[in-house]
Image 1 (tube, rainbow, N blue to C red):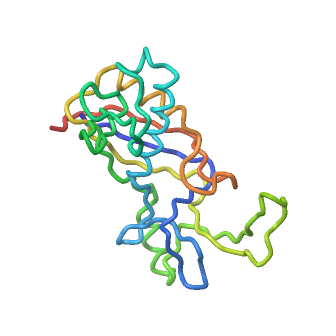
Image 2 (cartoon, rainbow, N blue to C red):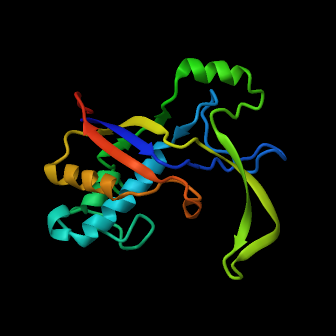
Image 3 (tube, one colour):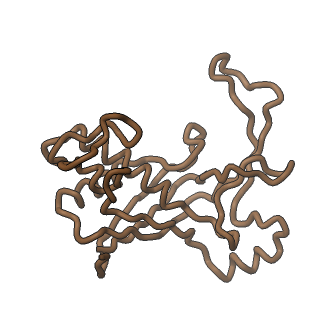
Length: 211
């Protein structure tokens, strides 16, 4: 079964690439080989798994045949049948998950995007650059000599993509995904600075099946 994913943000978004641009930008956002901004499927999978795990822990009788395990990096992970719902959906080293996530594309006017990109030698558009300073959480003051710059998307951006489910999901599994998508409030880095605030996260079943 194939599901469409649409995520709309009310604030700018920063998904760090771990790379900079010399002395111009310290922290760049992720881009593909064509310089298009995207939202990695692995990021969406991670935040959804965390939300599903929390909801299942709080409502074990409704969303799991057995209590969710302690996570993929712990000794309490499911290693044999019966597996918990979280492991069945998202997978572990011991079982392939039902869900396969794909990268989400940034929704922009293609003509406008590519025309402006030709005039942008640094290939920054449509991202914005912001300069900030590191704050000392201990002293509650600005840390000296800690000025840095980072990229972020504009406000009110929309990303669209899909996920595939091997076979079909049970009503219980679909409900867990639906509640998790409504549970999430932020995605990405610098959430303490107000970035990555979600307006709407929709997962909708579409036509077609995944084998």
